[in-house]
Structure formats: structure tokens, C-alpha cells
Amino acid sequence: MDDHLSDFADGLLRAAVQQSPDWLWIFGASGLPVCVAPASCAGIGLYETVYESDLASVRASCDRLFSLYVPFRAAFRVVQPDGLCVWLEGSGYAFLAPDGQKRAALSAKDITQYKQMEDRLTRLAYYDPLTGLPNRRLFQDRMSQALHTAKRYQHKLAVMYLDMDDFKNINDTYGHATGDELLTKVASRLSHSIREPDTVSRMGGDEFVLLLQQFLLPDDIAKIARRISNALNQPFDLNGQKITLTCSIGAAFFPEHGDDSETLLQNADAAMYASKLQGKNHFHFYSNTE
Image 1 (tube, rainbow, N blue to C red):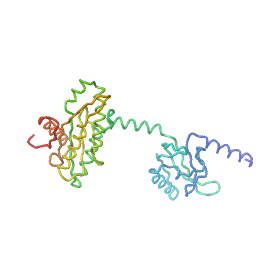
Image 2: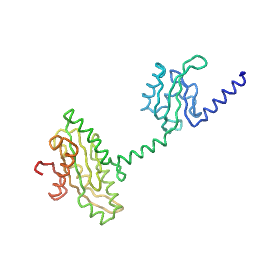
Image 3: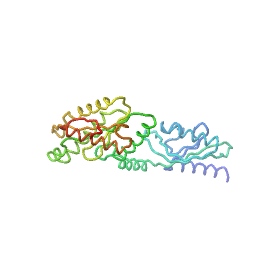
Image 4: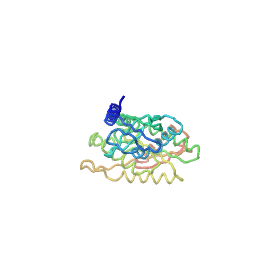
């Protein structure tokens, strides 16, 4: 092929690559690009483009690629020049360029829509669609992990069961739409009443369960229960209606009241019903006599 045809072919290939919907970086060990697609990212290095929290993994894979010729496949995020973050899934491989220099290529497809769908399915599987709180399934997963840690390191752990008092009357009086809105506001107040390592979950209806960790004394749990009661006792404004609410709360401790999730949940539930029997709007620790 003469030089004119060769230059034409090179230009044609470069134009096709830069207009491709897929992404491509051809670079040296420094990460500086020799060729980049799409064209809007031309001149921007690979390591300048990858999302910060994904950068270490991508850089390590590229280092192995150059030093050991180990190809890789990875999903990672990049930030486009317009600031939009997209998910890519790509393959990295090394090759020798016509000038005899070792190069690497990373080709990738945009999988943002797939990731968004995956996130939606995950939320459906693990989160309550009404309140956005973890559902029973996610709570059980976190409970299992917390119990494993508590048993291994002799940490304390508590389960708190919470039920709205006379919630059925609110539904009957104001309608289920108002009841649902009230539950979302209750969930928000509960989320703001717990600490960073703790979990609040909606178990169904007007029942919520809290997983509490990193405390020293039972009174620490009692303080959290009082804080929750005070937060929920403040009137709720729902479409101009002022609705007041109380709740009954029960708590069980690991290992005193059980060493598995099912037993702890049952005993916290029993303690909550004991609170209702005391006249509602009460907090009660589980007792082995119940």
C-alpha cells in the first residue's frame, strides 16, 4: 500500500474510532493517551477520566497489564467533559505498536442503563418501596453480619421493635393515602433518631425494627427509645391536618435475650407488646418472664 493510501486508511480508521459509540483508550505506561474515543474526550488521559473511587482499581489493573501482560475486564465509572458520570464495562490488553513500543488498549461499552436498571432491581429487592427504608430481607442480612461480629469480638447488640399506637384509627379516619404519607414521615424521623452504625427497617404495616450497635449500657438503648418517642410525639402536618402519634417500643439484647436473629426479633416483639399492655406509648426491655 502506498503512503497516500496508508495515510488515508489511518485517517479513516481514526475517524471511525472517534465517532464510535464505544470508548477506547490507547496509551503508554504513563496513562497518557495516543488515541482516544469518543472525540469529545481527546487529549484527556485515562487516569484523569476515571471516577475517583474507581481509579485505584483501574490503575492497578493497567500496571499489571504493562508489567505482567495480564489482560483484565472491569466495570468502572468515568466522568465526561460535561461532568456527566457514566458506567463502562471494558477489556484491557497489551500489544506492540508498529514503532516497536509497548502499548495498551482499553475498550469499553457504556452500561449506564444496565447499572441503573440493576440499582432499581436492588432497591425493589432490599428496600421498602413506600418509605425507602431497608426491608425485612436487608435487615436480616445486616442482622446476620452484626451477630457474626458481635459473637467474634464480644460486642453488644440490641434489637428494638416499634409499633404505632392506634394506627388503624388514623387510616380509618383520614384514609390510606394519608396513612401512607404519615408512615413516610415516621420513617424519616426514625432515620434521624439513630446513629451511623445502626439500621432502621420497616417490617410491614406500621411496624419498624431497629438494629442498634456500639453501646455500653442498657440505659444507652433507653435513651434512644426516649429520643424516638419524643421525635414521634411531635405533631405531623399532613395536608393541613395536625396528627399526633404515639408508639410502643420493646428491646432485646444479645446475648442475654437470644443469640440468633429469630429469637432476638421474637423477644423484642414480645417486649413491645408488653409496652402496649402497660397502656401504650411506653418502652419495655424484654424479660424472661414474658
